[in-house]
Length: 74
Image (cartoon, rainbow, N blue to C red; front, top):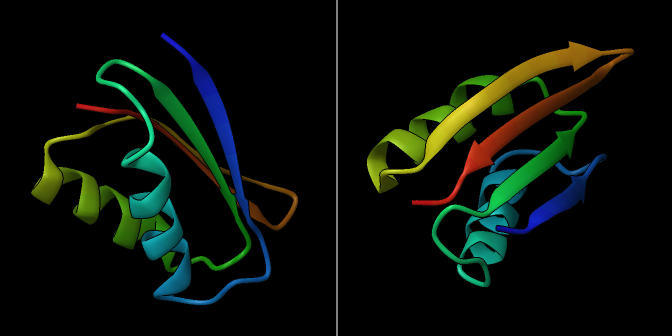
């Protein structure tokens, strides 16, 4: 299992979701991806994308104006 970080700060919807999707395609099942964003819309968009595609959201939180979502690749 690998742990990766995707920095999509300063990108606006839908780019964070598109970049997340592109990154997940390079990962294996069970890998963990931490997505760091500044667009608050990702707090709904990425979990919805995960539900549709079978990935699991492990954690989602906001810290100092950034939104962090950790997901496990299906």
